[in-house]
Length: 193
Image 1 (tube, one colour):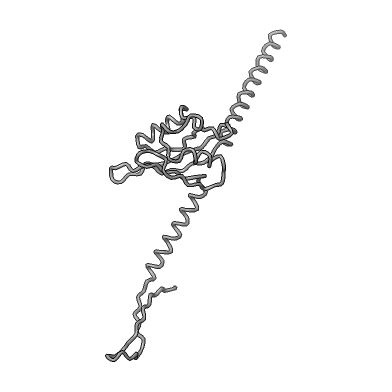
Image 2 (image 1 turned 60 degrees about the vertical axis):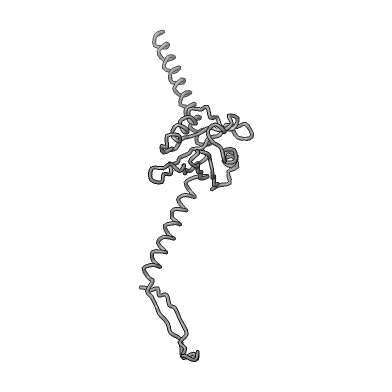
């Protein structure tokens, strides 16, 4: 069981200023040291979770302008969106970059304007090459008492996930059509027997 002690040393002098010794006072700071270690461990755990949960963090001020965007990864396409959104508000986001007329962006802004949590909304945008991309954003309103101060949230690029889902839907549709054609072929065959 380790104890942590904070020791202060001081000179012991007489009236003429002659040094006669060194005094010391000690205080047990074991509890404080353990509390500091727990806070540091908790911060590290939070940082580890945060770093693995998203490509970037975003903040909006009370005016609902994107005010801070911090990248967690080096994905250049996410960086392109981050650069284009930084400092913008709904009406500033250009339709050539962000397909703000999409239902997803309308839902995002509806929740933001009403100070509601934003949960896993997949938002389309167009990168600098003209390719369609997607980010998943989540965030929460920051309140001081009853006063709205803005938003904080996370975002992750999910373009590959969206493309995979679309491919699966397409394959499922093709399978359903093939099954229907086969069912009809069998029915026609039975009708001719």
